[in-house]
Image (cartoon, rainbow, N blue to C red; front, top):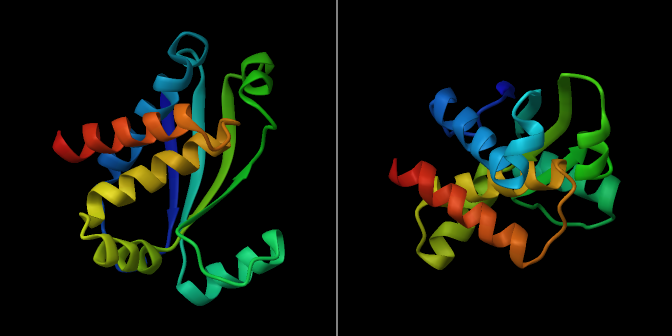
Length: 150
């Protein structure tokens, strides 16, 4: 499995691209390593300011607030990805707001890096068609801890 990650902006955070790609890869493997191992995946990761992500959140979700992450998937479900004959797959875009994540971390006394990788994994899981629930939250936490402590 090959992972391509196009990164735009920084939002004041500078992560090693290898760690970002590893988080994406491990998230995908955790969902379906057997069916996805022969595929090559690409994702666009964009860092936005609070104002910009708030505008996007309003435009697409009618929510007048900033948010830590928004995902825009190319496929409707994990099954649709499995069924595609293409070997090179663009999963979609993940928009994140480091400022929003940092605020949450200060409020909850959490590590920014650990939380960021949980948010990134969360975004990837949405691109793979997963919805909020115990399975999703368990995977994103597991991946964040793997990456943070490796």
